[in-house]
Amino acid sequence: MKTLYFDCFAGASGDMILGALIGAGTDEKALVEQLSLLNVDGFKLNIETVDRSGLSATFARVHTRHEHKHRHLSDIKKIIYESDLSITVKDRAFGIFTRLAEAEARVHNEPVDHVHFHEVGALDAIVDVVGAAICFELQQIEKFISSPLHVGSGLVEMAHGKFPVPPPAVTELLKGVPFYSGDIQGELLTPTGAAIITSVCGQYGPIPQMVIDHTGYGAGSREYKDFPNVLRVMIGETVSENADEERLWMIETNIDDASPQIIGHVMDRAFELGALDCFFTSVQMKKNRPGVLLSVLCDARHRGSIMNLLFTETTTLGVRSYEVFRRALQRTVVSVETQYGWIDVKVAHLNGKVVNEMPEFDQCREAARSANVPLKTVEEAVRLALGKQRS
Image (cartoon, rainbow, N blue to C red):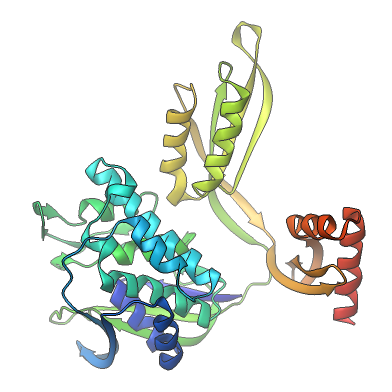
């Protein structure tokens, strides 16, 4: 599986991530061409090789003209989705900005749509985030892992005064994520850097067993004595062909006094917030009341938002959470051509062997409706096409 590992011993910022990805083999010309599809004027990406404590690193500096206007999340969405970028890049970039805006909104106690701070609206942040999403696609990254994040130490000057490191927005973004503070003075982890890494990474820890194809070093703007202010990324193939084991969180609550309509709404919202699974179990509660055990499975970074959802959208007064381990088969997606159109198929692997193949249900259902044939007819056509493609 094509894996990218973020080694954040000196934190991370948007330009450090972009520089590291370029240093790890992203085609500069292709990146610049893709960025031009944003259809936004007023910026230029300058890429240079610099020295950071004796280590050669790539410095990706985004030059922009001075802007007086503020952008809201809706403005960012318009820029991204009216561009000619691929839908994968659009969705990933906007997901990162949404996570960043939600963190700022919680810090300042205002609606997400009202957020217009520098890290959300500035053109350099747009280029950093979209540029990173482009690099991920160009490199065909399938899995993201990060080390614990070094945030720095001391105080940082902000619009409202001096705040301790990590500053409030970064602290929000780091919920459920391992991080630490060392003896390096200054803010090493910026909101943009934190938003990118915590949006794509579902696993944190030491370098996994992998065969490395490329290593890149992205330079930060500050220089320290005897400390390379760089972000290192490693790109390669993870070695294990067995099922991957993940540490996840199960969040549960028992409810006996809420409308089924509300419970259904909570499931929809849970998936929107990043839940991996959500299900209901009928239970018999005290006073002989029939009730529902509401269970949500999520990773560590979404635990806080899921718990807040249950408290605000249901009648519960208490929520349980506990860590669980999930072993998941490695999956790939292949597309096959049938007489009903192209259909994606999820293929599950164990020890290098295919153990399950499942056509995408929604695509099959839409194809069946369009052709006015039974759903099972389309599914059978997909399986036949898959067999021919492999023969």
